[in-house]
Amino acid sequence: MRRTFVAPPGKPPVRPYNRFVRRDISRTLLVIAEQPQLWAAIRDRLDPALALVRHARPAQLSEVWRRADPWPWLVVGAAGEVPEALGELVAGRPIPVLWLRQPGGALPAGVVVHPSWAGLSADLDRLGATVFGMRFAPRRGVRTEGGCTIDGAPELEGLMAAHPRGLAPFDGVRQVRRTIERFGLPCRVALEGRLVRLEAAAP
Image (cartoon, rainbow, N blue to C red):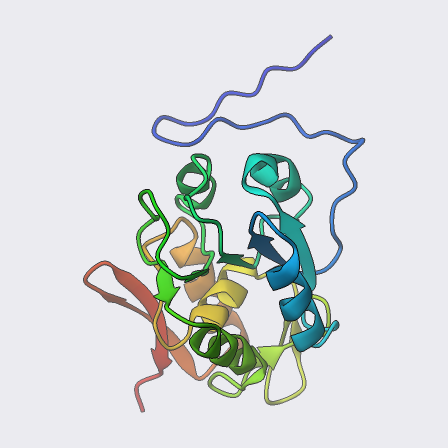
C-alpha cells in the first residue's frame, strides 16, 4: 500500500522517504550552479572533514537536496536565475544561503549576496573558526571547548555557520535553546527584528 504524507498547514509538502536514495552521512554544503567550476573551487578549499560538497544544477535542485540529512548545512549559489524550488526548500529551516553575484528572481529572506569570489571565499574560510568556544566536529556535530561532542543539533550548526550575521526565523529555535541549556553553552539565541542569531551569554 502506498503511504500518503500530508504537511501541516502552511508548510511545504512532505515527500515520502525514498529508501533507494542514499542519504549523506556528513553535513552537506550544496552548490547551485549551471557549471561545476564553483563546486570544484569550494570542494578544494574546504577541509573534507568539515562538509561534503555537492553540486546541483538548478533543474536538479530538489533531487540533490534530498540526499542531505536532514537538510543541507549550507547553500552556495551562482546560478544566473534563482531556482523556483529554493524558497520552498529553505523556508522554516536553519540554512545559511550565500550567493555569488546578484541573480535574477527573488532570493529567500536572509540570503547574503557577494559581488565577488573574494568575499564569498572569506565567508567560507570563517567556517573553521571557533564560535563561543564551539567548533564543528568532523563530519557532523559540534565540539565544545570542554571536549564534549553534541550530536543531532543541525539547528545549532546552522546558526554557527551563519555567525555573526544570523538567519531568517526558522522552526526549531526552541530546540537550540534546549541544547544550549542542556550542555551549558556560553551563548544564547537572540531574536533581533527578522534575524535569529547566536550571541554571548549574559554574565
